[in-house]
Amino acid sequence: MASAPGLLPAITRRAAASAGLAAFALAACGRSGPRLLLSSDTHPVGYPTVEAVQEMGRLLLERTGGRLGVKVYAGGQLGAERDTLEITSFGGLDLNRVFMSPLNAIEPDTTIPSLPFLFNSQDHMRRVLDGAPGRAILDRLEQHGLVGLCYYDSGERSFYNTRRAIYSPEDMKGLKIRTPNSDLSVAMINAMGANATPMDLGEVYQSLVQGVIDGAENNWPSFESGRHFEAAPYFSLTRHTMTPEVLLMAKARWDKLSSADRDIVMACAAESVPFMRRLWDERVGVARDRLLAAGVKENEVTDRDAFRSLMKPIYDRFVTTPFQKRIVAEIEGMAS
Ligand code: GTR
Image 1 (cartoon, rainbow, N blue to C red):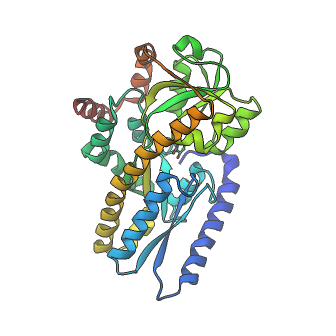
Image 2: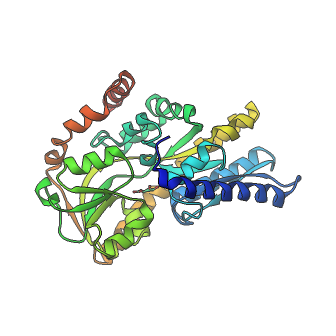
Image 3: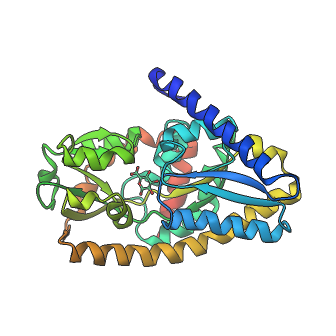
């Protein structure tokens, strides 16, 4: 797995901490209590992804007669997504709800749902991820010690920045834009004319305030919950990607479950998806209304084709293998 050498000691420390945490949780709940699957989330308590994994835990308790449950460590308590993913892949953490982009360095096929302008609507995105292409992409993770349980929504991503409204790629020139840690995101933002700066989500607020970056891109709920709007009031609706969230289980943990329990875990995860989507749709509307009331300046980008037309080199670079070409063609064929 690709990771900067300097990160290893920190990862090892966190892995040890989370392994200790697992042992603690098991000891604390004793033999008669539920066996708690520990899960990480970068988002705070109350965010739809956190609520969805908690809902999955409630269903799991019910369906296993109290044998299995879930404990979510929210707000990035267990570390940045890149680090917790590494821990999960060797079994130090049972469950992990992450954004799809940090998985790109682990498995290149996970870049597919992040391709710019791939989905033409929320409905298209949901049908693809619930269907065969979505499953085929999740199945690619098993070889890395991760079992993909389900996708959650993360909506449309658009640009926001401290300086000006963006209407065309011309307006992107000279802006330092934070991207998630993914080669695809970096290449995409650079191809749109800005200067991509990859960093973890948790560093974005401070970097905007200090002027280390001029902007970033995300959905309304993350723009609000990270308080990025306080520093970057221009929100321009490019809607360039619909990268999803994903819920993963450590394969080491999965392999220890009976096949009946695996079916229950999969079913509970699947049932948490419509629950999450209801919360998500509500949350997008509420976050947008609150932010507009707080002074955020939203603008439509009518010429999205001006951005789309710059994306050919991105498809040429990231859609190269027969698998990638087949899945992208299937996804395009599912557009309505
Ligand atoms: C959010 C996503 C996070 C996080 C992030 C990012 O929309 O929910 O999990 O990874 O984007 O931009 O890094």
